[in-house]
Image (cartoon, rainbow, N blue to C red; front, side, top):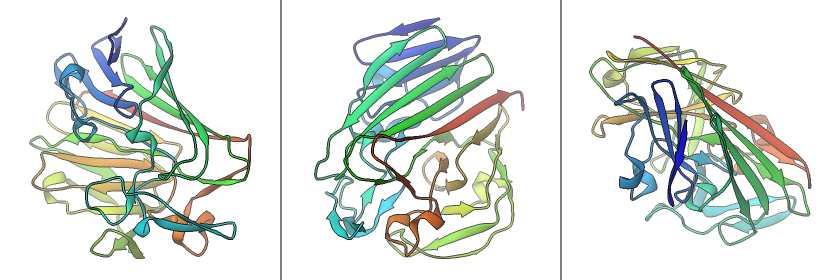
Length: 286
């Protein structure tokens, strides 16, 4: 089953319902099993701001561009402020732009955003986002094509939010954790044991290396398994928000300013070439 309105699109498969807001950054408004939210969920008609969504895409970079400037192929660039009073640019540009609906079927929704070079990102690209829903899982895929005239830096990812419920627990294998300064720019990495604890006991706002999935998220209602083609994981566990984030991403935060961006996951995509990534959330009883 499927449904749509002027502002949102829904897919239904068994007991699962997915609601997407193309106009709000191609974001997921919510994912429910019957009436139980599997991500932090808001009825799509009630979602007034992207910051309350369940998930949004990170394109063409994850996390931060430090102090809104970077060098690329011998030229210096700046990016405009895009998040309150933050000194850095955050999460790319696609999350703050309206997407267009390309196709809708019983099993899949495809959205597209076409970026023209502007003050927020100096390189043109096209990005398609594919949502597929079955009775057991949600799969999302991003396909980015470089439409600029030069090779450009590219990073991809997603920013999912999960409700913190009694017994919410995160378990995943990682090897290293990036420490950050007071503005959340990475300063260096340290060894990190595997994560296996209740979310209420965690205090993370970090990017992790050595992750090859899955990440297991479990509470008294459901068990979720998050897998992705991406090899880095950002985990954010605020103790005063009622949610936590487990974000598959392609590169270390602010990799674009590091001495060797490619070593830290940032891609170089040639003109006319494409790169893609996927994320899957599989549901099962606790």
